[in-house]
View 1 (cartoon, helix red, strand yellow):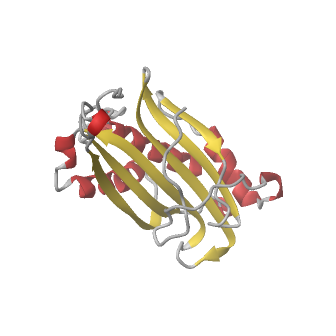
View 2: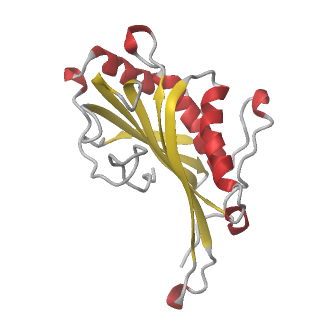
Length: 222
């Protein structure tokens, strides 16, 4: 599976560039954190998503767990991302609770789409809309949407220009019974966002009004 690019750190919106380290020791973690991690593993996700646990950043919270996912279509990777679960049993004023989810999502898109001035607003609405569509409540959502373009020169001049969208965000899932949020549902909502960014159509009839990015080009060779 292609790993999500980018790095996570302790900056204002919960995403940035810190070193990743080992997963928190789940056996020694509080029951609420263990239950939240188990719910992630039990989530039923849309076909075409390859997902696996990865080393989690340690500096963000006392207990952390991370997953990376790739949306695949045949041999093509359409989008990738990373989702990190944070837990601080003592609570965190900026979180409005003891849990926080942090994400990085990236995908390539056509240059004409990248030029749309409304694209960042639309992409941000995909995140909140994906969670709300599953009936999830959350607080303190924050983040950034970045679009970037690359032009090639010299020996790479024959390669077409490429554009990329990147969504970095964090939010606090509402904690339910026993102080445990429904992390499985949040993971499913996050995967909806990932698929939408990849340009895949919605899977349920109720999502027919959702607009996705057009399908991306296949990988370019030098």
